[in-house]
Image (cartoon, rainbow, N blue to C red):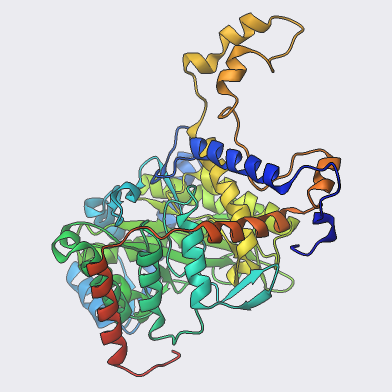
Length: 523
């Protein structure tokens, strides 16, 4: 805490200036490990896979059975029904049943295995798919939390803060989308402020609005101002989240937004949203079957709208407590689902979205840490390409935590090191070091150690590894208190990336004009 009496420096103790200098050196070393302008992580380790070929084929067969016998509802969106009729599906009202293998064939025929999402700063451009992992902050929380003010409704200022923190976090490659819901701005107009904040305060790739087709159209219009209409006619500059209304349903809101983005060749993450036991079966195999069926139907629809439009196989799967019905996170069964879904996505040949720093804890405590770490590491090992919810998630997604964000970013940096795998260069083999040291001595003073010590190991800027006495002298702070200092320092040091004043002016004029065209509404 800022008013902690233990923070007062006693005679003989090291000054804050010394500790600040140490922090600056540590930050510089970390930049050497996590490149500030890396647009993704190149994976150099094998995937962790839990299903053999026979099991995968069984789940694929069962998913085709679900699509063929039960079908998917496309609610209140006639355009989807007409496209499915023309494609040869069996349509009965809003229920669509698919000939066996139809959806898989449509996806495999035209959906790209990977795609480039361009950022306004070309050095931040990313590639989603293949052996790459892109880490993205959390999404959709109506509340925010910090140690100073506790839990409260999010504002547009909070939204801007998280965009700035994301911009300053090299371990996050993407600015995300609705990082938190700015409830101080009317629902029907807040998408303008959110998209503009991503553009103004960051220069990483970002996501579009999906809460109404017109809001998706506004997002595309703003992207055209930023990148140029000709550019986005052929390039992807937006990746947006389209959730299935599980079980086995897509609603008009999601379908409308997905259609707008697909028509403009912008990417969509087709993501079944499943809480096993409530929105899918209680078993891993049953949940995987439903995920695959819903994702196949959604991605196939996008290919009908515009063949070749980028799609991502999404999966958000958690379990509910069989006692209370509340969602749970960081448990073994969703990890098995995540591993299996990653295998299914790779067999289909499309990028995969899942994972993140998910937890049910209300505060950044031990429960938040272990639940988030379980999901983050599972997602990394499973081969997630687009890891939404990497940083900030609290309270089952209801809150975006400032301190939790910093703690998760530390984990994100570690994921980058883990996925790089084992260095087998001549330097890494270290035979000269072993020759120099020999038996019975130590490596602390060896030439090899001196040459490599700054980048040899990942060094957390949050964790405290000092002695008890040093920790006590530094204020006896826990991890959340240290993270509280860090996010405040980051915001204090933030500098906005340059933006062409003419583009900025055009965006503001567009927003002002569009906002004046309709009344404020909170729906």
